[in-house]
Length: 483
Ligand code: SIN
Image 1 (cartoon, protein in one colour):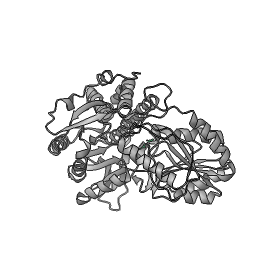
Image 2 (cartoon, helix red, strand yellow):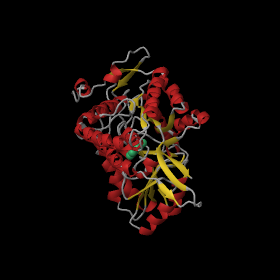
Image 3 (cartoon, protein in one colour):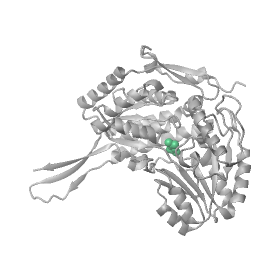
Image 4 (tube, protein in one colour):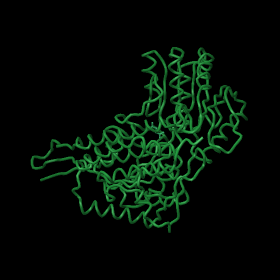
């Protein structure tokens, strides 16, 4: 059954900036994870073409020092409207290269556009201070200035929203942005840039570097060590985040890092079980389980365990997997074969450890679609307890006391999102104080929003994205003393 027409989806956007280059530097092939078909071949940047782009942007910043925050704000407003106008075309493109269900792709476009809208308004509220000076002959000012040229390195799981979240905050602060999209999903970002060009963002303010996987490390090195780049904002794994920080050590590069998570999902004995199980479906299986904030370790109080598992299991059995364009599909393919191999290893590790599989279907072919899997009686020393699962696997553990739930939840080097289900105000107070996570979401399985700070404790990252906190990441503070 033909569920999509690749040619017609691509024809909605003009990838001209990237098509007019020669392929002397090699190519980036973009594949559809649903059927492994080739979607498009893009010419790759080289280190020297990337340097040329950086130099052009840097020159413009120095020559046009006064280019204004207000102007970027107006352009962001127009960009936001343009993106909403093209919502369905962008969503189709995202399903094609990323695989997520169409409904999720549409809500990602809206989610990403909301950041652009929020920052289009917030840039004009950046303000400094006039300080009370200790000297009668001096005036003290504190100015907030754009940090400069920002490099954003964005992930394949949210190719539109993560780019929008970073770029709009940086542009609203008066920065310029050069972005490197993920090798698996560059087209959505390039389509966004195409729309940005249409409303007036020039190459000197917003541009992209496109490279295949074989060149990612040298481009990462370039972006982190180049002194014309004032900040690197990265979303991806903790391992890659650490590598980038090392690459930037020589020039003391500044970083904002949104890294891995290992979210606990705690269901207390007084929770609304129907609500918790519905929200667990949303949290666990969003984007086929491939988000940094997906429920990763599910802790359910022993007294309600069997009841909770049986209600959850019935909901899981009703989930439809398949092509993201097909109506009713809730889980699409994993992103690529490396991701699938890693996921299979987590499953075999659980099998070897003696965990009990309540719902599971062996994968017999080379496809990337995995049925949702539910596992209980797992030990705490399995890989799925320590690592981000990044697949549709729900591992449910028992706990007896609040103290145990909090200790187990915090027993990880990560600290991004956490979830709590309870009807008790006192429990909400205790848990929100004691959970070592940047986000605590109570009685819901989703929270992502343009107005709120998104970011993690411990090895989950550095800095925050979203709301006024996200803008701070792209501003410098200058103290001016006037005699
Ligand atoms: C992520 O998984 O990296 C982002 C998820 C979100 O913004 O909700």
